[in-house]
Amino acid sequence: MRAAAATPDEIDDLARRAQDGDRDALDSLLAVVSPRTLAICRGVLPYSSDAEDACQEALLSVATKIGSWHGRGRFTTWLHVVALNSARTTYRKLKNQAIPSDVLPLDRPDPRTTSVIAGTRLDLLDAMESIEGDHPQLVEPLLLRDVYGMAYDEIAALLDLPLGTVKAQIHTGRKLARPLLRGDA
View 1 (cartoon, one colour):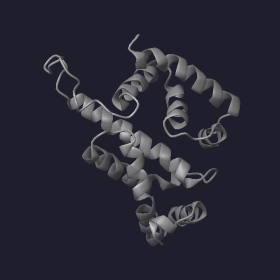
View 2: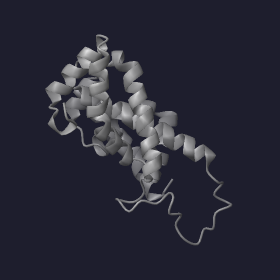
View 3: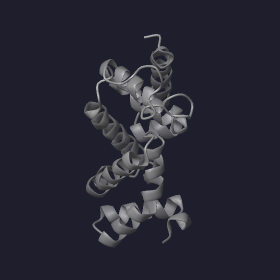
View 4: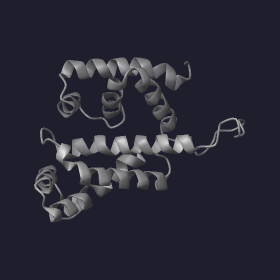
């Protein structure tokens, strides 16, 4: 099965077969979802090599933790969360290894942390980490809605939460994120 030809139903079927121990289905599933996983990681990490590392980690998580997909929603929805978490983990690792900001010249933006797409994605990740400290339940719904454009009901099904709770978490997360993204905090 070619990646471009795989429908959501076909992907779900491959995932179910892989959960049942079919190694060929798992290999096919990983091949089919690899481009999608890389695209999700590239949406978070500005450098291709970092995104590729995060993608590989996400695919490894898919292979080893496929049993945690319960089949209530689409496999690709679950995959978004796995890939997003992998990209965030890679970002945290890179941030911890980064040169301290007092060593970098401050007269112009650092191209390693600045994105040309809607401000800085890395600033968004910093804001999410800040929010996550006090309100960890807000980050995942907010990223799924505002970064990946998932529908509220799809997020509610994925996270196994009432729709009203998801909407409230996203609203609260946005209120907390705005000043952080503007630099007011």
